[in-house]
Image (cartoon, rainbow over all chains, first blue to last red; front, side, top):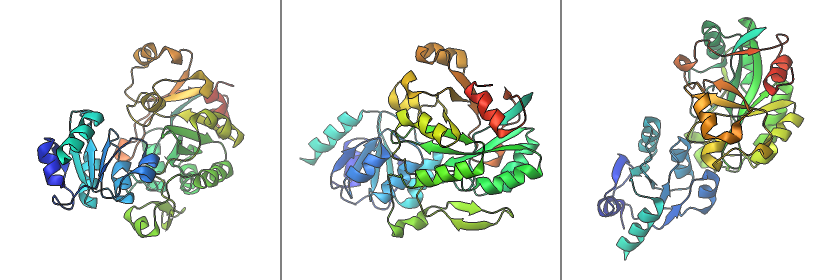
Length: 110
Length: 239
């Protein structure tokens, strides 16, 4: 599934535009502790989290994650949106829980 | 005697702070704000504290070297010291325990500028200070005490990077004697919502990341004498 398809199928808000809407997502990781995300996330995959500090952009870049999805309606501070846009990382948002989002992601892949 | 204080602010060595948060500008702004005592508390480092101590002295301000530690649980804890050498030794200790080491090719992505007494850049921090350290929150109070400082859980009422946000509640076994609240926190209400905090001592912190956010003087502590040691004693409730 591409990022464009993800946004459309899960009705996500685009909080910052990344490098390419047509990049394929190669899996998914859910987590909030940044050190775990660095070591466990999927390269080229989707990262679902409720963390919204500036380090989220940094960690996405460090872990080669093209697309971050903020769950549970967590708001994105302007500085995070700007940093994600600058680094070419998609920042998406949804009011749904991480579980619901991951389940919908898995279902719409099949 | 009473001292107007703010022990929580960030310089250009922190990823999230503005470039004009240089040690000289911070000391100048602290003076303009009417503070008597302040600390520089960058994430995971005290390396801009020597320059800031110099400029604080130029303005006749009491300066405490400090850092804002990010623990294994990604909880922020202010670590205040009375002596620069203790803050710098603790910086080394923390630097060896950072959990995230970016590959060299990605190090150019963020600026973390170390400044000298002339307010000139002398280098970039090679470690990535956005990383948490492999230090547990239950070990922090004793560890910082042994290092010659005082650990104060930061912005306890903030919905991110605080003990309450990340761990759900304060456990007295964590052993802190004083905690920091944000400027706008309703302390009475906050403590009533977190009864485990009854009897805790509190300070406030501005957490400024830009010069305009260094708050005008509004918070005081009562100290026996005008020294960093006396400030640590007063904050920890020992005098």
